[in-house]
Length: 243
Image (cartoon, rainbow, N blue to C red; front, side, top):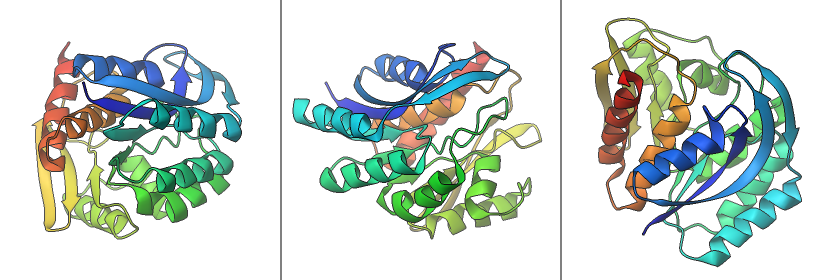
């Protein structure tokens, strides 16, 4: 069975974070191991508390995961601080074989900041060049680029390409926060941008970013190409929203 290492925070509600990641990996028949970066107390409406795990403990968890057996992919979610970002980046340089999917968790759905400004800067400058796929939503892409959120297809495609120029091998800019009948994601690869479309569905977006990135990591771990994994993950999340 393929193994995916999840580096992320917990969500006490079970709707997002490591709980959602491990559930997604299980549904894809992939074994999940994890390094916990933060413990949060959340409801669907707000974040009540957040505690960051010491960076040394995060490092030890990552080392333990890789020492326990082969890891075919890594999925990264909430990091919380500059120190943890730098710790994860250093670990990825020591274990470079596994492809890395980064879901840049910068704020909760309710609006609470989940990564400080020094951490955001470190993520931009140090972590992005180590990533195989970056999966920001529209607000996250704007924060990473230091610009305003967009809802124009041409601008979003340009933003996906601009983010890819910062180091990751590919970028999937998710269109779930946009408007219109379709939810369109833009996948920027070395040979251009693909538009991935699905019907826009009503319902909570909490945990969908975690599920999408974990689904991609699971499929990559099982041998799918990055584009095929992204398309399959979009179908998976659409099915989640329907149910």
